[in-house]
Every structure is written in C-alpha cells, then in structure tokens.
Length: 177
Length: 289
Image (cartoon, rainbow over all chains, first blue to last red; front, side, top):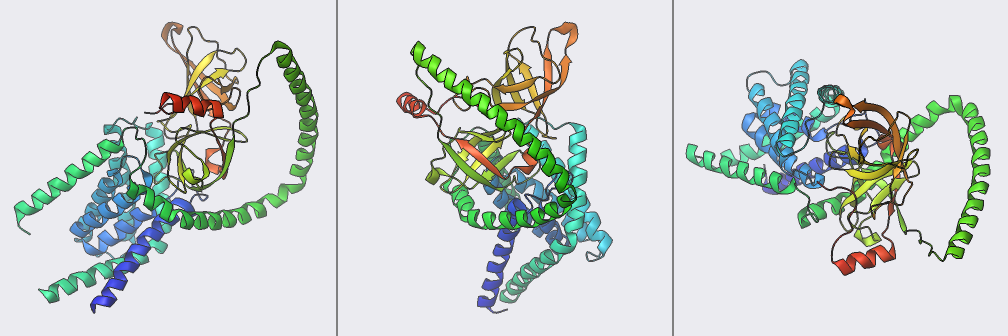
C-alpha cells in the first residue's frame, strides 16, 4: 500500500474511533435499554480482537479504553485495563476459532462484555468505590450484554474494516523488512 | 522484540496505568489539559449527536403519547388551575414576609444567579452517575456549584472546562448533600447509593430520629450550594437497626436522572463568592470523596 493512502486510512481509523466515542456518550444518551447505555467502543475492540488476535486485541483495547477514560475523567486507566483484558481474551479465542461465524461473534461479544464489566467493577472497588449490590451488577451486565448483541450487526463491520487497516500496516511492515 | 523487553514494556505500561488510576481516584481540583482539550474538542460533535438522538427519540415518544393526549390535556388543565391558585397565595405570603422582614430590620437574601444548561453527554459506562453539560468556565460555571432541575436537586459540578462541565448526580457514590425532613425539621445526610442508581441513602444526624415512609426530604440550606427547601426526594423504606440504635432510610429522588435534558446551575451569591475569595478557598458544601 502506498504511504499516503495508508496515512489516510489511519486518520480515518482515528476518526471512526472518536466518532464511536461521541455516539456512545451523546448519541445513545436518550436510548437506554432497561436503564443501561451501550459501550460501543467495547464492541469495536472485541470485533477487532477477534480478527487480529490476542496481542493486537490487548493493544487496541488499552488505547481505546484510555482514550475513553480521558473523557470520563475519573479512574483514568481503568477502562484501558478492562478493555485490554477483554480484547486480549477475545483475540486469544479468535486465534483458535473461525472468527467470522455469527454465533462465535455473538458469544465473544457476550463473554467480553461480562469480563470487562467484572474487571472494571473489581478495579473500581480496589480503589475505594463501593462494590455494587449483586442484583444491580447482574442486571446491568445482562442488560448491557443484550444491548451489545443487538448492536453487533452495526459495529462488527466497522471493526472488520479497522482490522483490515491494521492488517495492511502489518503487511507494509513485512514488505519493508 | 526479545522476551525480557516485552516484560519490561508491559511492566512499565501497567505501572503507568495503576499510577494514573490511583491519582485520578481522589478528588482533583481540575482536569489535565489533555482531558480538557478532548472534552471541549468533542463538545460540538456531542451536542449535535445529542440533539439528533433527542429528536429521534422525541418523535417516537410523541407518536406513542398521542393516544393519551386528550386525557393528559384535561389533567394538566386541572393542575394548572390548582397551581395558579397556589401561586396567588404564595405571592401574598411573599409580600407579607418582605413586609415583616422590613419591620424587623432583616436584610433580604438576594437570589443566586443561575445558568441554564443542556445535557449533552452521559457517562462513559453504567457505573457512574455523571452528566456533561454544554456550559463551562466561559459561561461562568465553577466547580462545586449546585445543579437543579424543576423537580429538585440534581447534583453538583465536579470539573469545569472552557466549553463544558461535568456534573456528578446525587445518585453517584461520590455525592452527598445535607437535608432536612420536612415534617419534623430534623437534619439528615443524603448520599448516593451507586448502582442501581435510582435511590439515595439517608442517614439521620440526630439520635432517635423520627423518619417515616412518605416523608419529604428537602435541602437544609446549611451548605453554600443549595438554598433551603429545594426538594430532594421522598422516603421509601426505613430500616431500624438492632435495639433501635440506628436508623437508615432509602429515598426515592424526585428527579428522574435518566430523562434529564436541561438543568440549571446555581451560581454563587455575590456575598458567598466574596467570602470564598477572601478565604482563598472553594465554598464548602456537597461532599467530595
């Protein structure tokens, strides 16, 4: 791939991530499902990880999580850890299964959502925040998982495109080497 | 990359992240310039996305609500008539109050300036109860200002950027406000409960407190953030501890935090501001943890 075209695709990738962040924070502000709002960036990370494997899932998860944390402004770095963990786990499984099978994608998104929420809540409680009541924890996690599954048809194609941009970068690196 | 290099890089990244989490887990006076620039830079996009989302959901709600429009219209007419009557009575009380204060030589407390704001974004995840509003330091918003809606107390301003501010809702575990039981006048502390985030925890500040389900809780006016008498919520359940030594209650807030679209930031009164500047510190009030 020519460098200027590659640069443009990287800019587009950054714009897409920021766009997903804006839609997550503001676009879904009035669209809760059972009182819960979705984390589009997490679905995106899980999709990319499924396509690109554990290492890239970890890195993409940490970077997008950290970006989101900067807007959140509290416990900055915790979303990076939870998204990174979910991305790594999704990539680890993605390396061992055929990632484009519909049921695999749904199962990974469901599992990744649950894992990231548990990591986040455990991390928050480690830094002094009260652990939520068990019924609240279960209700939020299940509702969020359901919401994410509904959003898979919209977000997963974007994640596949982003995985393609990352793959192109790997290809360039290979040619240069 | 060699194995040891991977371990060193991973260790450095983890150390940096844990340090960042630790440093931002405590109360901060403000946010870093990176955070501020990111929030302010995304503010116009968030406002546009928020308005689009509100329009779409508004159309749906309007279509669904048309079926009951006639009944609702009748109910609102009756409510308006009752409120108009109450308003006349309150105006009479106000006139009487001003006259009595003049006779007693008491100075009138000037109303605090207010700033109307639009909610443009919700929290990053479902574990925090915060809002981002479209007013910042440019519009005169300052940290620790109280935030209300027509239904009652919403929360307080946590951090302020040039174009936007972050508001911590009353339901957030980091939030607390002083109140009184309207029926008895007993002082209480109302705290955020964390998720499910629809209720508040009430702790009485006097021994043998008389609190019953259905009691209305309003602000005490002891803090500099809220005037006395702003509605907070209604007591839902009262839990009396062993031997009646402790009482704790659950309060259902009057504000529906999930549907907030516009809020009012309560500015500091000129005398409070002057006092705070003289003391060289921020006004005390809502709890910060």
